[in-house]
Length: 320
Image (cartoon, rainbow, N blue to C red; front, side):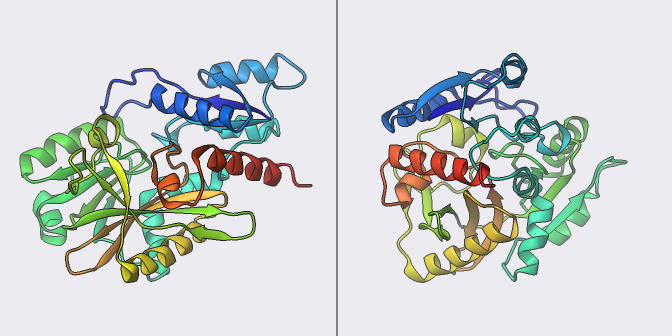
């Protein structure tokens, strides 16, 4: 099958809130894995190149597209999936509705609450912003430190742990200037991050395992940030507690279904020292790399994973 990989690597060394980027190393790994699964790969450097290819020929050069553009600012820009849907070109993964719901951290938390899945205490400030919320009131409600997140972001973009009034004012000033999808203030849960990949096996949704990220020295990461995710040596390991894992898998499957995910998703949780679980968010465009959560949790090789996702996505996109 001819597979296009849509990516955009501009400003890929910058980690500020203002930037989207695709890591070329990840794009290269996906390309190699697809080729090992006997697919032909065509790299599409940005949305403009994709649109030109669609408009310049009767038939596009790909059978299906993988969207590898970060979903930063998902709620305020035109999605590449809008063009693909309009021209009936199959793409890998979940529908636009699922991506929008997962990107909106505020909405996904409300949905989790309706499913009786615990979430951290939170406060949401919608846009347009008239003024900063009172720091003392936030601290009184959420405790200190607390976490601030850019609503509608992905890839841990804009996630900050706030420990002082000065830090709060500086971070919020940046958010109010550069982010227009709302600001989420969240209780900081002391503990560890766990993530649960969910995959459609062609018949049903299966939560594969609970995965913990460890640093280069195989130590726990106390607070997961964008800088750690993209620029430090981290590895995936299967979490071994069976009782906690069973509950995490139940929660992840419920969230996957409620947010209209179909092909795959990855739900992130926080686990306290006394065994309490809190849902953080669901990612409808999870990382697909050979050492990531899906390969670590599943009973398949990396080329087998990519081949399964490609074929299942194509099959569901072309159903009559």
